[in-house]
Each structure stands twice: as structure tokens, then as C-alpha cells.
Length: 454
Ligand code: ATP
Ligand code: MG
Image (cartoon, rainbow, N blue to C red; front, side, top):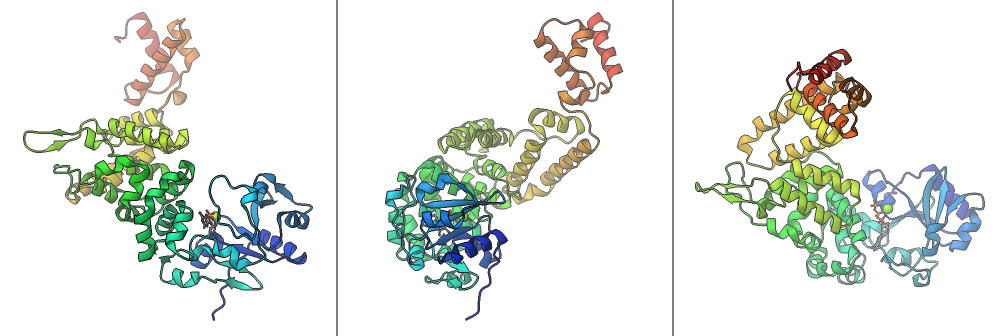
């Protein structure tokens, strides 16, 4: 059999050697082995060993240990400030939220540890001396790009329903497909996700959304996503009856996600949620054409409540909600329009908004795509110009500050200072005033003394 070589980073090699010196078995396991075999860069390295937590601690007397995992029987060792989780072989498969030490049964047998893992591709272990340990034929499933449970899918999903979402996550991330048995059990048991904490669901959901194949999974498993986002059901089959659109709202959303070029979670979530308000904000014209005036705002409100329910952090939620709110705003080509956007939502959000806009356009009827995308490209070019010229588009770039305004305009109230600063900024952005101190002081003096009409 061909020997599989997996790259072992120096700190992992060190951990393996130290534990082996004390007579224990040690293996890299799970995601890092899977990703190495697939040629993907592992983002962390899990290590499993026959040593008990006490024995692990003894093998690393000089290393810093993070104690938080200890209560679950996991020792986290810091090597050059990088954490590595070392876990004793165990036979119970309790991955739920309240892992308690008394739930954990240790074993000395690696294969027993691998048996409790979710999918064959995640149940492989590697040690530089022994090579790959693959008792459940994970390599074959990697070859044929299949998601297969270790043992019976019925039992494994029954033990921990989060595995249903994890199956979809690995399909999405790796471009794999579930075996018929896997897919059948997902459809049969997804309801049990109701018992899973929203934090665990959120973490898998975000990984799905960030994957290239998110659109495929949406089409395959709308029921599963609707379980924790029931609003999604209202999109399915909701007709748009509008010349710009070729699909119903759900299919349009799927196409927009497929066309989204950004791999940023905020952008992709915004594309996912951008039209959730359409079924609640449509107007049917007498000509039979359906319009959706104000649907950005309604979609933003729905997005906000869904993301609160799914316990997203405030920053992610606020950014996504803002992008959804503005996704259908008027986008005009011109310096002052781009500067207004920059002043309103900042560079990062504006760049993201243009990504959302492009995905939205590409998910609509292809007839209009070219000219509309060209317009967004033009806006992007203007944006680059403005940024490279370091043009003024926010209060902090203005050549006068609050004190200048207060002095020149002889103001007492703080809030008046803000008002006048914004009036000046508006004129600088629109090109009516030059952003230099002399010109701005001249203008303020004129307004103050009444010889400039305001
Ligand atoms: P990632 O690349 O996201 O880290 P991963 O495969 O490492 O993917 P983790 O959630 O970090 O996934 O879990 C590490 C390993 O633990 C998995 O590869 C799998 O072997 C096992 N595992 C994790 N969660 C479960 C679960 N709910 N049921 C069974 N095994 C699980
Ligand atoms: Mg991992």
C-alpha cells in the first residue's frame, strides 16, 4: 500500500516525541489529518494519546498549560504561545455542551477512540513512525468525495444531532457529497437539531455560509436550514413577476450566493439575507409587475431579529444588517456619491456593499448584467481614486476642526459645532468648497456675517 506522508509541524513533532519518550502512544487526529491528506492547510492540530491527563501533564513539566480544557480531559499545551490540544483516547462520544469529566471514559486503544468520531474522513490518525491509521476507510471516502458516518448514520445522528449540520458543513467545505444513507438520515432526523444549543448550531452554520458550496447545500437541504431559520421557507416559490428577475426569491438568493466572489462571512451572510423582506414588502402594479419598494429596510429588520436569535456577536450582526439595509439603494457613478457613501458607512463596509450588490445583480436576469456590473466597476474605480488621492470624505479629514468652527462662528453650544462641521463636510464632498483652512474660514465668516447666503 502507498504510504501517506503527512507534514508534521515542529511543535507537534515535539509533543509526539516527548510523550513517546515516556512510553505513550501519540497521534495527530481528525481535521488536521483529513486536511493534510486533501492538500488543504490545517488550521489547528488535535493530538490524541494513550496517556491520561495526569501523565500528559507529567510529560511537559516545563511547558505552559491552559487549564480550561482540563475539566474535559483535554490538556492544552502552549508551545511558543500556540495552543495544541492533547486528549486522552476515550470511548464515549459525548460532544454536547456540558462535557463533564465523569462522562468521559478513557481507553488505551486508538481504534476505540476513532470509532466515536463522526465521519470516516475525520476518524484517521497519523504518527510519523506508524504512518496513517485508517480503520474505517476514510481514505476511500476521500477518494470518492463521500461523507460517511463511522458506523450507522441512524445511530450517530441520534447520539448527537449536531452531526447532521456537521455533515452538511463538510460537504460544503470540501465539495463532497453525502452517501445516500447520510442524506436519508439527515432528512429523517434533522428535526432533532431542535435539541442542540444555538451556539453549536451557529458555529457550524457560519462555516457552511463561508464555504464555496453553501449554495449547493441550500438547494439540497432547505428543510434543515429552515429549522433554525424558519423565515427561509417564505422565500421558496415566492414569485417576483418583474422584468429584472428570472427566478423566485429563494432561487435568486441561491444564484446570488453562487456568484458572490467574496469569502468574507459578513458579505456572504448579507447576500443570504438580502431579500428576506421581499415576501412582506411587495406591491403589485396594474401592469402585473411586482415591485419591492423599501424591501431593504424590511429585510434588515428580519435579518437583525434572526441574527439576534442565532446569537451572532454585535459587530457581525450590525455590519450584516447595514449591508442588507442598503443593498438596494441607488448607486450613482460620481465622486461626490462615492464620498457620501464613504462618509456614511466607511471604506470597509462600502467595499463589502459593492460585493453584495454585484452578487445580487449576477443572481438576476442575465440580460441586464453587463451594464449593471460595469456601473459597479466604475464606482470601484472612483473609490480607488478617492482613496489614493486621500480626498476628504469624513469629519476627520476636514481642514477645520470643532475648535475652529466654535471660534470663527462664535458658537456656545456643542451641538451647533457638530451641525456646522457636517454642513461644511457636505459642501466639501459635493465639490462646492475646497478642503483648505483659508477657504473654509472664509465661508464660515461669510455665513456668520450674513454675506454668504445659507
Ligand atoms: P475544523 O477544520 O473545522 O477544525 P475538524 O474536523 O477538526 O474541522 P472539530 O470540530 O475541530 O472539526 O473536531 C475535531 C475532531 O473531533 C473531528 O475531526 C472529529 O473527529 C471529532 N468530532 C468533533 N465533533 C464531533 C461530533 N459532534 N461527533 C463526533 N466526532 C466529533
Ligand atoms: Mg479542528
